[in-house]
Image (cartoon, rainbow, N blue to C red; front, side):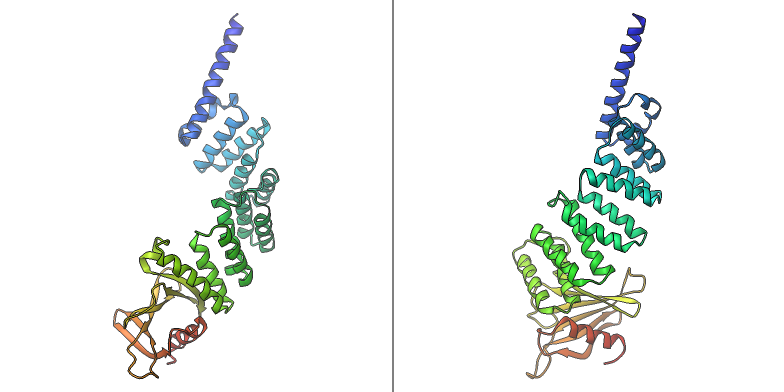
Amino acid sequence: MPRLYIFILFFVSALFLGQKAEQLFNEKKFAELTALEKESNTFTGQELYYLGYAFFRQENDLTAIEFYNKAIGKGFNDAGVFFQKGVSEMFLEKYNEAIGDFNTAISKVPAAEFYIEKARVYKITKDFANEEKTYTEGLKNSQDKNNESYLQLLKNAGNFYYAQTKAFSKAEKIYADGIVKFPKNYELYEKRIKALNAEDKFTEADKVFEQVRSFYSGNLLSGDYVKFKNMAVDEFPWKNQWINIYKSFEKPKETLDSLYKVYLIDETGKKVERQFNIEKTLQIEKTDPEFVICEESQKGHTTYPVGFKNGNFTIKELREKIVKILDNKK
């Protein structure tokens, strides 16, 4: 009888601790959950996973991995535990182990989030061939192609081709496919426009911009697009700096209205060093330019003797004239 009593007491105590662990996990009270470490010998595999994740959230990756392994040892071996183990290994710079666990997670559930973190390891280790392979496989095989994780995978893959390998056509294709799946994610349109302009496909870029202009006119945009009434359409390097070009959604009607704004970013990449406006000007003669390049600075408003006959000039022409000004060539 005493032995039975002790067994029942132990069972009830273990059940209570397990329920408490799950409750604390669901309530995201991770510090309180880690305090149960000494009683964890009675935990189930899933509860051990909860404890491991709590240590991860407390930035204790070594202990997190310890409990993930215990969870797996008790038969809790779903995709999530291998994924989280891989994340902790990545933070500990155990990259080979991380890739192995991400692969195990993907073999169980090919989730977009798993491919994102696997690609991150290859980016960190500068293994660009495998990073590209991971994006290709992820975009093809992810089972969740309509959620936020897949959208992020699309953006990461597009940025890989756009910024890292300069394969602009591949980036543009990814953004175009993304727009089909996420037609209300207007950042994808912006990225596609920039990729098209990087390829010097100015007419196609303008067509996509006109789509976005219609969204603006229909009050479908929000945030900075509405606040500043423009969208980034191009970026290119000048010496050790970058130049960003934004195009206005509102077509210039009055003198001084801007068609484009051009920003020279300083070498830190954090501040605007110089700002240019492509402004509508007063045409006295038909041969006079309709738009001129002006600069805004602490000294005031400077108008350069450089202009455009009308608003049909290309981004390439704008780049060339801005570079001449920056090179002090009028």
